[in-house]
Image 1 (cartoon, rainbow, N blue to C red):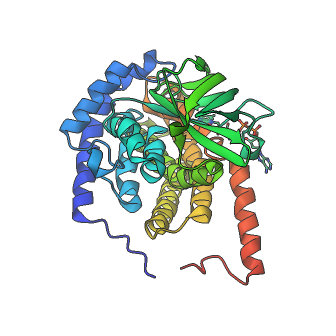
Image 2: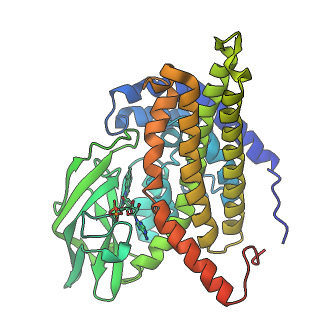
Length: 397
Ligand SMILES: Cc1cc2nc3c(=O)[nH]c(=O)nc-3n(C[C@H](O)[C@H](O)[C@H](O)COP(=O)(O)OP(=O)(O)OC[C@H]3O[C@@H](n4cnc5c(N)ncnc54)[C@H](O)[C@@H]3O)c2cc1C
């Protein structure tokens, strides 16, 4: 089957509008991040989202019945890369983590009632959400099978007990999708932010600061939820996590590629202007190597993202392709931001400028949505299984 990389005219037009929106509205507002430890205030988020709605670039991944653009994965690759050039872009356009992944999961799995109550407001930007899987050791982390949070059936309710941490968006979220152990496996539950049994303790002091609601510690103490709050079917949680994770890790790659590209744009401009040793920095061989390696990492990342997006658009699982892409891109965008900082010299370390700010935000991506080691393990195991079946890499084409 041929892979068609042609970008349709309407997506080119949307990409141009997205670039203009990010440059004109998000970049000038970035100063707000200097006062931030756990994302921008919700009032500023609402202001930017209003501007994104007016510009027609809001909710690119959301279903159309709730006002989204319902873009294909390949179209998302173009638009979300543009959104990511500013750390405020995905927040303004409502295509950032974790809401974007939760929108996808709710759209695929939620009942009509759950969609009206949670999916609609989420797509419209009326509330934020969280996805609560990770637990402090010895609970779920790189290995989700270590899940300790329990859910026990009591009449028409389920009662949740356990502790989660690093839950992005946890502070101030309207609801969380919570993964808990049930007798036959794991189950996802929708838990309202107002539920007295879900206690959001604090936001952790992580090195990244741009995610709305920070990364929270959440305690579940006899947290009672009605059985209608089960997302999908009981004991199917691990399967649903896979439905969410493959596309969600790809959209992370798209946004972070845009952010890394921004650091590169700054570095190239700086190297062109900066005079030293009788010439400009961009003419010096060792600087040219940094610039060229950034260009190579950007192109290779984009090619992998587009290929994996195309596989998802063919309604295939894309597990191998998204794992390969996530591992490569998470490491490549860090290299890009690191080289960009080096090229910019001391000014590259200033947190009121994009290079240092993005550098700090990008590093944790090698850990969340599957650390590189977890993906490499999965990639190698699939390769071995395929070899046993006589399949070679690329045989799916
Ligand atoms: C900024 C940020 C945001 C996050 N947001 C969320 C969120 O919204 N919701 C949520 O549920 N979780 C979230 N997480 C948690 C994240 O998913 C976990 O941190 C990640 O899964 C690793 O789990 P852990 O921290 O328990 O590390 P551990 O499980 O203790 O793993 C430690 C290290 O072991 C190494 N390792 C793992 N497997 C192997 C292997 N097979 N071979 C060799 N080495 C290996 C890896 O280097 C890994 O980093 C977030 C984390 C961060 C940093």
